Image 1 (cartoon, rainbow, N blue to C red):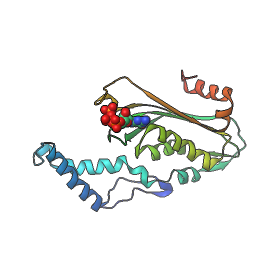
Image 2: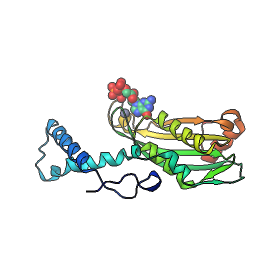
Image 3: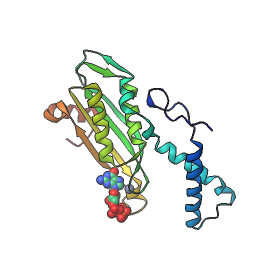
Image 4: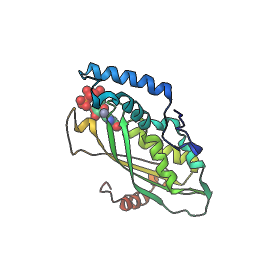
Length: 207
Ligand SMILES: Nc1nc2c(ncn2[C@@H]2O[C@H](COP(=O)(O)OP(=O)(O)OP(=O)(O)O)[C@@H](O)[C@H]2O)c(=O)[nH]1
Ligand SMILES: [Zn+2]
């Protein structure tokens, strides 16, 4: 079984998994299921350790990606100096405390100084950081820093709205809670009108 999570430009070309990692993870998941009282020889569970081993590698594939390289692979010199907003980028991540999903939307904006990037690359950066074990705050800041350090724009804004399964299915069990995080640089930090324009565009009630 070949394994090339890291395709050209740092993102996935095809789904394939490292044999040894998959084998070792499968053994661990088999043992975990048995510890939970399951019979791993029954039909439905026979291949489950293998499936989980692959699923967990898929959900953490972001470690094999270079978000900075993703941006640099499509950076274009342009004189446009107005806000660029990519909103409603869906994201699925895993909380690092419980390994349970958190999911929602990211809204990302920047104001170019000299360079723009391909719009899909903004969504790919979100993906590269989300497919790791995360907390929502760090995910927000990492996306901001990546765009800031590669494009050197006049400002970056990132807002993430997400629901955490660890708060919904277990623990405090609040099914309707949504967590919002945000981070800003440059014009979005200094200029309230700019930040307000961003919030208007993403339809946020935060400002
Ligand atoms: N700040 C932050 N906290 C998170 C995130 N995802 C999960 N958590 C929280 O991580 C915390 C871990 O707290 P602990 O008290 O160590 O874990 P716990 O006993 O399982 O906590 P409960 O969830 O309250 O039952 C919990 O409050 C979770 O809600 C996140 O993205 N950001
Ligand atoms: Zn959690």
